Length: 276
Ligand SMILES: Nc1ncnc2c1ncn2[C@@H]1O[C@H](COP(=O)(O)OP(=O)(O)OP(=O)(O)O)[C@@H](O)[C@H]1O
Image 1 (cartoon, helix red, strand yellow):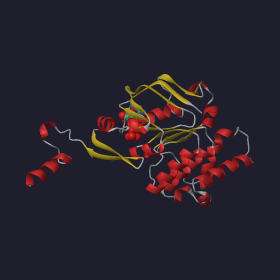
Image 2 (spheres, protein in one colour):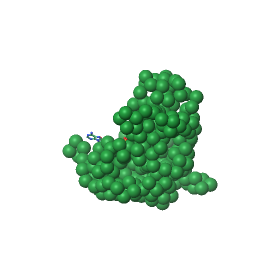
Image 3 (cartoon, protein in one colour):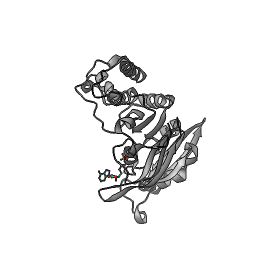
Image 4 (cartoon, protein in one colour):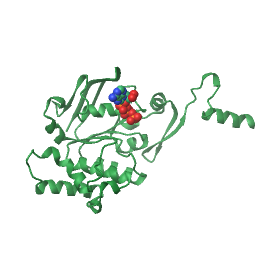
């Protein structure tokens, strides 16, 4: 399923948060959305999973205006893992994941064999089959994050929208989740903070800064020292480690007149040099 975001603008609390952002993800593509805190990543994702209608612009899936179609129709096609989403502490894992089938059920429909199969498959893919009968409230933060992903997968979406899917996960599970998502073959738009994860798993990276798209393209072309330095205010170096992109990052000194703040790395480096 192809996603086209066309000149989307959003104003929140009287302030422009997204400014004419245009971005396409081809069918089966995996685009990572990166950018500093507050740059508008979650707001853009909300426009795609129909939580916040854009003030201007259009979001299309396979050419159709997402906000013009019935909500249930959109929910069947678009799976979502949001930040700080409720898992339903009192539910069992299987019950919580089964909520991902809601968009497929009519008001009086019963849960069918096909629904059960979709839930079982989602539990299996996320390594949660053995947890099916446990209460969500008893799980760790990382396990709950996997429940949310399983719920999104249970709907068998054609487009997956993920807001920080690796939150709370240890490094092993971060890799597992992104590998799983990449191998699903569905279209993915995921906000990620880890540039190394974005470079390793996405086939395109979109960089937001203060609500504007400032770079978009293959990771190696977009995640350059110049772009990272400019967008995050850090000194960045980029290394090719046997085909994997690795980043060296350190805060850039932006203190006025070299009167550095106590936490500034350059100040510490200078005092070490002075002491020699
Ligand atoms: N309901 C709201 N009212 C006013 N401002 C809002 C509202 N929601 C978000 N914002 C502001 O919009 C900006 C973008 O927020 P958003 O959550 O999209 O950023 P983000 O890039 O996802 O950030 P983070 O990396 O910290 O999750 C922020 O400055 C935020 O304070």
